[in-house]
Image (cartoon, rainbow, N blue to C red; front, side):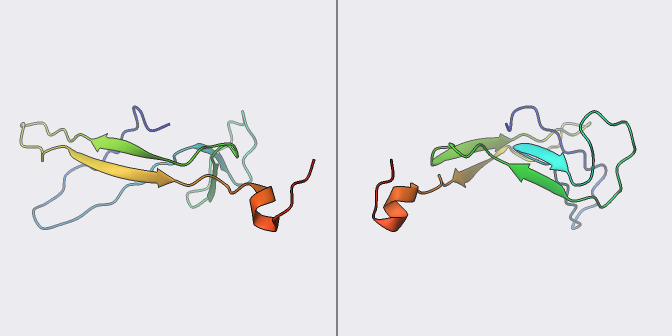
Amino acid sequence: MFDKKELVLGKIDPGKTRTATIPLGWCDVEGHKPGSTAPLPKDAPHVCRLPRDTLSRQNGITVKFDEARGRAPAEQTLRVSLRALSDPSSRTGRCWR
């Protein structure tokens, strides 16, 4: 899900910041039909879903930087936590079969 995602930021002057986002998981663009070649609206909302049976876990994501002159910052590792949906029987105290 996270492998081979790339954020292109361009030139960032000293003391400045820039933010880029990419969708993770299984994402659709609201109002866009799968397989359509119609251009996407610039601010179209993305609806991203993870499978309902996803287990609770933490993923380590290593962000590597690249710079044309070799002056990139050191790589950083982020921890992303996913929390599984609770079991419906544990929410109600009853077991449905």
